[in-house]
Length: 193
Image (cartoon, rainbow, N blue to C red; front, side):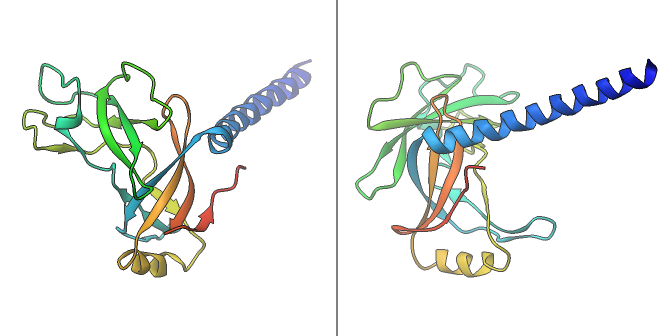
């Protein structure tokens, strides 16, 4: 009986692990498939990680948010803990989306049809007293991995012409990178699975 229980326990554990991984993958795929598309302008940073391969580190037009855009600056005038932030984006005339307003916590009202909300986190200790200061939210979209050997060439191209990332945004503001864009041309697209 002990051997049988051990096998059953191992199978249950394996099914739970497979279910958890499937749930994570399906959630990401659902955002990529059904999320609202947003295009952000990006700038190059560093294209190599010796352990993971080529990537481009994405410093985009929402990487730094001016404190004056935050509608509900807290009493203590600095961030504490792992503070959540929602940044409202609106499509600009050039096709790239720009931040218009931000809130710590949740947005007070849903985004309009020509707007989108992206959710991020702010690390501890960002000062909010100076309205001319900026903060750096983490949206989880700071790297895009590329086929081996292509990071340096793309980084060099990013210095001479505009590049962007196409995001898919879930209704809760969770973002997934959908594609790397060179102007209007899609260079690399993320597969659903």
